[in-house]
Length: 313
Image (cartoon, rainbow, N blue to C red; front, side, top):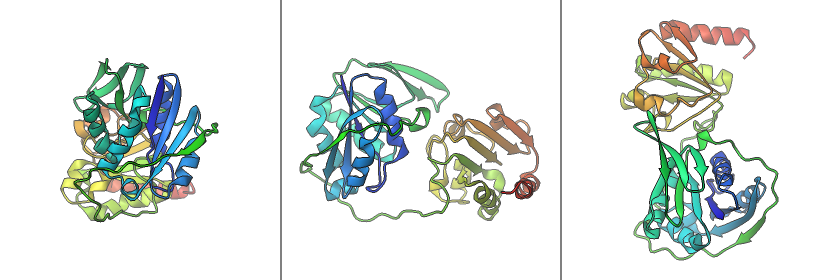
């Protein structure tokens, strides 16, 4: 058996989600190959070659691949797919964009957002906003899978695979890259942060998120938000944690003024430790919290900031 993992990266550094996908691939048994598709991405390929249990890395480069165009990625993956029993990619924006296309062209099902590999043909994935887990058994000749990176351990750097350069086939593209705007922050990226502090509708307005930002700066944390806070215009869309936002599983998740709707819980309930601050003692967030504080956030958060200062943060 051989498994292909599509690397997640920004053409400069290898994303931690790739390490999780490699761990999932290991559970299949057999050889693990990584495909790095990008532009000027040799550094990414070299990093991928160091991952545990990886026997080969393939590097394909072109301008469309550098911009993660779905047509280009689809054509590239299909050009090498015949050699593999399974094709895995992180369940990221990029993975969710091109992997269904690959599955359709191979005439197989897409097995999305898996959280466990029980065997080479049996997988577990969440349904109903994470309120139930489905076990899926596939008889397809090739398994096309996206992996939820927050539920798998990250592969280490004990490998020494060879890097092979391959040609990127011409894609029949009906779309073209125009531009992109990336938000920049000195704080950790939300999906990779070890600590996340999120605010909900209870924050009242966007200006009050500055209270959470002060805590985040002290703890080296990322700032998130519930969909209600995003829809209300308090913060940008890229802050959103939940079923329709980003799925996170940090070591510490602090929910402030968040009631705990099903959609939000689906995006953070796998966090190692969950702390909730809410004045409503009946709020659903307390059902998943390890520590809960029933209090007015406008009093509790400044007190938390003060105590962190006393502790040297």
